[in-house]
Amino acid sequence: MGRGRAFTYVILGGGVAAGYAALEFTKRGVSRGELCIISEETVAPYERPALSKDFLLPEDPARLPSFHTRKTLLRAAGETISYKILIIATGARALKLGEFGVSGSDAENLCYLRDAADANRLVNVMQSCAGGNAVVIGGGYIGMECAASLVINKINVTMVFPEAHCIARLFTPKIASYYEDHYESKGVKFIKRTVLSSFEFDSSGKVIAVNLRNGSNLPADMVVVGIGIRPNTSLFEGQLTVEKGGIKVNGRFQSSNNSVYAVGDVSAFPIKLFGETRRLEHVDSARKSARHAVAAIMEPEKTREFDYLPCFHSRVFKLSWQFYGDNVGEVVNFGDYSGHSFGAYWINKGHLVGCFLEGGTKEEYEAIAKATRLKPAIEDLAELEKQGLSFALKVSQKPLPEASPIVLEGPLYAWHAIAGVILAASVAAFGFWHGQRHKRR
Image (cartoon, rainbow, N blue to C red):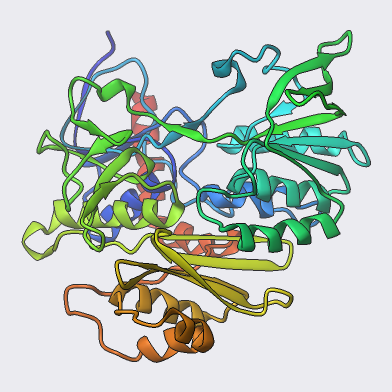
């Protein structure tokens, strides 16, 4: 076994949560040699949302290092790393078709999108398929965002998914219909309520057609698969408590082992607003959970329990939406669904618990977030529909409880993350110093 090394803080994982945890450590004055990141990726932590958006654009695409969250501290393999505090930020992996018994899922023109290597491969395949046909398997975030990018790259797109409408875990049929209509206006075709059955290949092993369970046969020059993710918890099962698919943590992101913390997609943490533990899959949760865990580690006496407002957002074509809270209960739609700005409220047990808005301003998004946090009582659904967005704007004027601050973070575009690189200058200096010293040994 190789020579062992010891660090005060070890971050296991190399995604968004890992990058933001490292950034928070540096902001709080961690000393050189105290912190390391252990990651299987060959690049430093970066903003994953850019991969399904600006990275895939045909003109002026985003490329690393423009959306790193931080510079590399250390890569370690084949050696023992000891620690006082471990932060698990292993994230999740893309589900592969082979796990569902579909053969040929390693074909060279079949793509997934989870990391930078996947994104580079997808770009290369797209460039070879201009004017061709792409089949997108899956109607969630990745499927919808990749489909938009494929259209922009002048590729014909057919989307296939088993649900009745796109982004079924969040969207109502009415909301989904708006986005599906917009996609169809761009030439995208939807085939719903069926799944992939098999592929057809040419002599070189490339996919040339997709067979569906409903009997359809779709010609394909490329296939993009976005059927969900699975949190990387297997290494810790039997050692840490696992709940709802993630590592169970408390309001400080501390696991059942008090020297081990878990953040991002891999953690299942208490949502105080709804009184239950959940595992969330979104970059906003990854960023904020990482920062909070480091704050709890570095300044435990000053750090309250995490009080998070679930947030989801996306932007495709010229559309942009944000959602806050929980999508349970009765739905009240508002706004102009034939125009560019509309939304919905979710009412559960007499209180507003969720808000969705398309085409809002910064102030309007802040208003729906604050309104959701306040959970106002709703007595008349018809009146709520009549007031529409103005209800959230009015309610948001009320003060929040002292223990429930709102920290809003809209979609972080690729160029915004340059600030993270600048703030990371001290860490970059350490990475260079540590690497040079390691070479001299």
